[in-house]
Image (cartoon, rainbow, N blue to C red; front, top):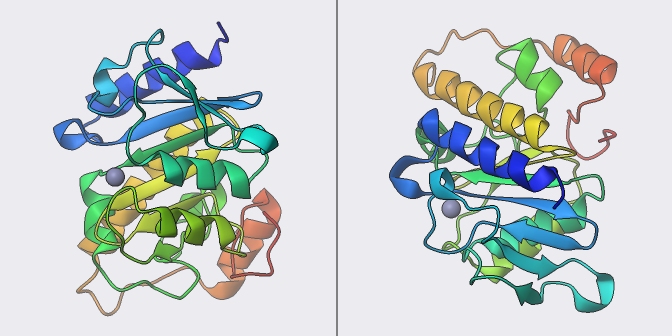
Length: 222
Ligand SMILES: [Zn+2]
């Protein structure tokens, strides 16, 4: 078995231990070759079994077909969309972590990022984080909207729902999910403080250029 699957199991347990998977919500997946391995439906992220993940094809001719394993999380179309839009994505994490849900209920900071540049680390590690309009969990149209978004992004807030991130490896996905959660917490904490200082456009742009993170809307390199 690929080492990436035990890594996914460990990461899911870690995110649960951090309290980022409240009420056994959330799901996670990895891409191994042409196959997505994802949390089964009804299984808590803290109780994943490496031998019992749902396996779904990512081969072009067979995209989205379940290969074997138990039925996948009903939110699997969002995972498929994240892999479809980013060929380098090898891990996707979706959480109903409390601060990200709270921030997803606020108005977006701009049309290209729900979260403002409050700290350098958010800009460096995640970058622009669009707000995906509300849809019921598992909605296929929402997944299509994610797939077709032209702006580059590593993470997004799902309106009134939570967060989703993608990364080239499991550890980076975990780090990005935690960064989105903490930036969401700052966003919510500061929401009523009208004198909040953000990084300036020049400061955020400099960081994004230096660290290669997506920032500034549609025209920035991923
Ligand atoms: Zn969800």
